[in-house]
Length: 430
Image (cartoon, rainbow, N blue to C red; front, side):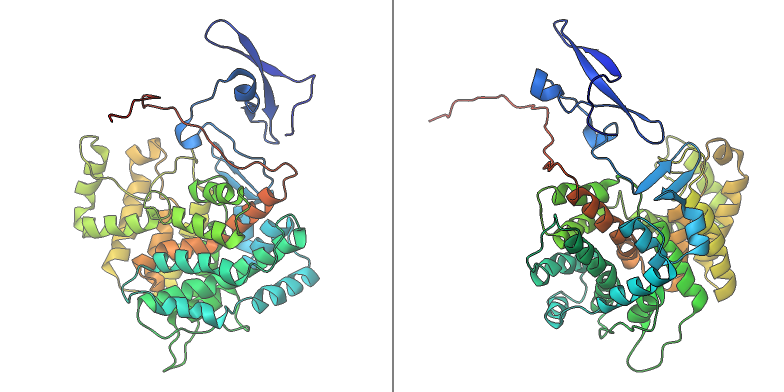
């Protein structure tokens, strides 16, 4: 899509009073239709009203495409299932950031560049020492990621492609280090520095769980599971946190401050807390014997109980990420042979839901949050770290979206309007 230049297809809007206005019609690469209302307010003084922006496209993008009707998610045109099966986080990051899967030479150079940026400034580590021992890891994450802007604001020109790319590589390199340090700080353990000989997910697990008192044995199946989770969460079109990053970036704010804003948005229970809600739901159900009664309650519209981790507002058939995550989840549990009543409960709930006509008819299949929550528990990741891990994966999407926005030829600071509900003018009582 682009700015409309006559002749163009148009829709006709009739305003109060009978005035008609032509609204240009745009179509994207998938054939979706959009009404271009950019000139509506300047030319007529009339605004559209769309709380939550669910019927509004705020930008043009080539990054991610969701086909909810057919259950597809594409990164730069590549199905997420193919990337998860054949690629890793380096492939995923290179694809999102630079627009193409890397050649062997590009992959090697990208790994060297990203690994070089894994360390954080020693003075930044002092920030971690200022948090209370019981601080939420996500609070630490938001604060420290924002603090990166104090260390890496070296004459950055966001209009310069090389500057944007360097900022993106810094985010990709440092985000696991910061997340792992947040975990260590929240659990009162000594910080563990990154290792250049480990890949993205292996290094993340090592920094979270290694202790200076004993060797840490990496489990390749566990590392691969975590890597797939991070890839599946790397980007997802214009969700709340991604839109937050773009809105913050539209003011030409420092990119690390924009990523921190995105992390703060993700922290909300309505966004990044969905997999936490799955674990809380399982704890509420309590045992396998209680599943039939809880499923019956979930079907009862007068009951406040809800099964968390089922269905998705965008995917009308199935969430393609859930297919991948289900296979990985079963593989992980089989490999680890963990005896955990909550995990057994989750597997039985999955079986019941997948065979229940009520859920089948309404296409309420277990989603990516259901399976990722189970995997996190199996990996030993505590509930208060779930959203932090989500942020690690999504950060590469955030910085890609920021970079795309910063590269736009026309600068537009985000400035929505509102419908005023107050009296416009009142007299002071004095």
